[in-house]
Length: 400
Image (tube, rainbow, N blue to C red; front, side):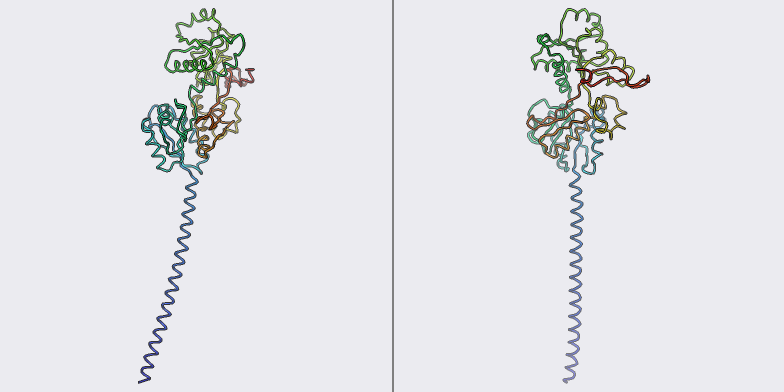
């Protein structure tokens, strides 16, 4: 009896021991699996964190554009090309995404959509009505770099404007004209502004007149037609002016210049510069007619070192002068945007393609773009007949 009980107990004891060993092995295996899963989770979390860090490093920038195929879309193609060219050089840090603005009244919704998509900055809009709409918003969901000026001086805190307007050029040209003609005998004299009467020319003429008035200088604004040219020399003979402004194209100004006394200084914006003509032979002829005219020009066309924009030359060289101007502004708009992302209180770029750029928060929310003063000079740059003509020279070299 005892032996049978002992036999049963022994068997039970062995089963108990076996069961305990199995449980221990299972517990050990479970612990190993738990540790392994925990390590995998940590590794995945670390990997996910690395991907997150990479995503954070590539900050999203919104490019506010007009509807594709619209007149403004086509007109601003070189501007977008400049922005994208600058972006391509730093695309490891940024992601550029386009947002279409169909009309100025939708600007709040478009900026909100860009912010909701994770954009940290918006470049644009370009049209004056759209920029004005941004300036009138009480709150911006993200920093904005607009590529023209607003009509109002007070703009939202997060808004910055890069001015490429005709008003900005007129301000600079008037300042140059006043400095170049400053003398006691000229103090009481007025300027004469010649325009054609077209909408754009008239707007430019009125802007020049307004800028002169700010300095207490009067101007006589005259609309000239081709039929009136023969009478102009006689009319100008009995009058004494301080200088002449051309608010017209280079072609029209070149027809008018021979009828103006040669000793009278003449001034014109980039719009009047013969350098901006695609037809080189026509440009050469008009440069001869406008020799000595004081004008404004991009640093990229005057004395900016090649190293400053060598990376863009393949595209830049194939563009017309008007396209080059917008392309250069696009590149500089991206530079300004990078600074605005850093919340820079002030900055300056002395070797920018579109002009010397300066910004100080104390002077308002506008980046000042200073063009180079230049003088039309049709002298050849080489001996070959097909060589390009040097239509402008640095004003300092010209003694102005």
